[in-house]
Amino acid sequence: MHILKLCVLGDGAVGKTSLIIRHVDKRFVTEYKPTIGFDIALKTMKIQEEGISAELLIWDIAGQAIFEKIREEYLQGTNAAMIIFDLTRQETYDHVKDWLRELNTYAGKVPFVLVGNKADLASKKVISDEVGKKYAKTLGAIDYIETSAKTGQKVEDAFEKIIKNVIETLSKKKEKAEEVEEKPEEAEEVEEKPEEAEEKIEEVEEKPEEE
Ligand code: G3D
Ligand code: MG
Image (cartoon, rainbow, N blue to C red; front, top):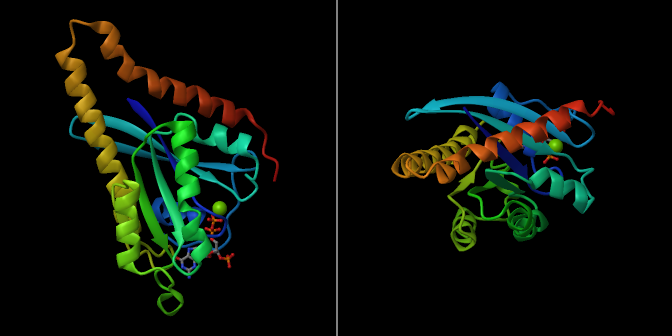
């Protein structure tokens, strides 16, 4: 069983928490309290595909994470990410590159999807689909998706794109591990990451709720 960490990134109030709740609970909730510690919430998802069985832990970060140290801890060991901006607020789009820089600094080069959220507010949109798509390509994102946590538009797509990518990566690693079965040290490498993630989660769980 692989344990994968998916981090959701983006400025405050772009809809990170709403999208996670929408995806996990399939409904839009306007009130949400971070559940673990003071700035990280976890949602788990089980995946069983192509002979791969994995558990996806979706990490949500709250606005209180103004300290780089907290963001660093949040990002370490990330296997995939979702970078979100608010389609109606230019500055949240401008900050995407900063989130990506931090992701790369603390987690290395991990696959990510670029998400423009609040697509339901069509008349207030300041970033066009075309601009978003082009930017996603420039940044090397898996894809660009316009979502609405309010209506549910494309929320599943956004998560599925990432999950598919992660499964593909795991399948490739599995093949590679099978190829090099004679060299056990290399094959073991594949197993190391999930364990690390598990430790981290235990650590997080121990923190008392500080709501
Ligand atoms: P964050 O976790 O990124 O900080 P939240 O963002 O999920 O807390 O959402 C911030 C605000 O945006 C919330 O409004 C939420 O209801 C709203 N929101 C999130 N997604 C959408 C969306 O797709 N469409 C619209 N119209 N609103 C959205 P409040 O008023 O509760 O602060
Ligand atoms: Mg939030």
